[in-house]
Each structure stands twice: as structure tokens, then as C-alpha cells.
Image (cartoon, rainbow, N blue to C red):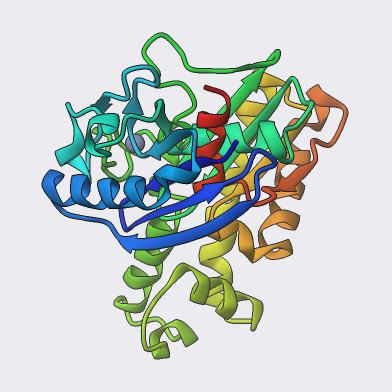
Length: 300
Ligand SMILES: [Zn+2]
């Protein structure tokens, strides 16, 4: 059967028709609506367009989502207007619909079709504008008591540091995320330091990685510091969950060896005495987003 996969993010809503082998047969992307009415209009349009070819709908969305009722329980930030609404009710469709946190949906895709297939213990991080997470422990995709489990981006790494969207301070995504890396680059540029970053027409996380690869010392320092902190946080998770693999997704993972190599070294130095093995860092195979959301529907 085909399923409709819808990935609701803070900047874009991506959707498509996904076959039972995980192939995305058709896809579309829209700027994220800024009101509940506009979101309902968009989701209804998507469900109408693909409805005759699909047997179910899966929705991945930021925040804490009840997978059975599709109720958005907690969603601070740009999509806050969805809090208290049932996502299934916004599609105008009678197809069976399930929804979950977007990173957990990405992990569901990796379990069904990707890097976590056949694994009983795995950790996934989605490294993008923010940081999401999914954890499979002893064969179970963890949900926790209220559906919050796996919000790895909100692991406290610096107790007295920057305020986070979640209400805590010093969370992982305040030190390692596209927005954190861009903010650090912005701060350093405006302190007057000489760097290629200051001459870029627009500052982006990708641009900081490129400048670091080209030898810019400031960019290398920003990336190095961010990866060290990610490595420290992830090292703690390795010792807690003892995963077979760690899967890295999200657009920062596209940096490839510039991220994976120093992160692996950081992890090894911190965990070898206890683990006595290197935990493979594996790139997500592309089940994020649309296909991940559809994996929720296929499991329905
Ligand atoms: Zn936080």
C-alpha cells in the first residue's frame, strides 16, 4: 500500500506519496504556514491530492505528539498554534492517520527501511536547525511516560549557559545546531575578529563548515568547539544506552567527514575505557522527513 507522509517543520512542510518499500513516489514542499487555519488548508490540500492513491496518512511534527489521537500536546516555538489540536483533524481526510514527533518518525523510517533495520539498540540524532532524537533500546522505540522520550537536543550540556526554547538552559541544541553555530559565528564576527565568515553575503551553518574546510581559523574553532560538545553529550548517551550504532541525520550530517571524523575521535576518547569498542556513526539513509512520517502510517 502507499501512504501519505507529511513532515511538519518550523520552516517547511514536506509531503509525498510513499510506497511500502519506502520509495517516495511524489513529493512537494511548502513554506510552513503561520496559523492553524492556513495549516489546515495546506494539509487538506495534500490529503486530497494523494488520497485516492493512499491507504493511510503518517505525520511527523515537532513537539510532543500523541500517536493515537494525533493531539499536539506540547509545541513551543514557531508552530505553537498547533498545540492542543489533533493533526488528523486538520487533513479533512477519513484515512487512518497517525502522528508522532518528527525525529521519532525519522527513526521509525530508519527502523523500517534504513540504517536501524534489524537493530535492537540504536540512537539517532537529527542535526538541523535544532536537534532531534530517537532511541531504540532492547528493540523498543522509546516513548517514555508521556511521549517526550528522545528529545536529545534538550540534554543539558552547560547548566548556566544560553536559554533554550524548551525553557531550560544550556541544552545541546543551544551549542550544537545550525542556529547555535550561526549565532556563534555572528557573535564572533561582530566582535571584530578577522575571518572569511565576515565577508560572506549571508551566514549559514553550511558556510561555517565550508570556511573551516578552507582553513579559516575562526570557523575551525567554532566547528571544533561545537563538535566537542556534541561528542561529550553523545558519549554520555553511549554509556547509558549502549547502542550498536549511532545514526546521524539532518542537513548538518551532509557535512560528512568534517563532522563524522572528529566526532568519532571525540567519542572514542571519552568512551573507550568503558565500552572497549568504537560505536559506528552511520549517516541516515534518507528516511527522514516524508518517508519517516509515512513509516508511521505503514506501521499503523
Ligand atoms: Zn532545551
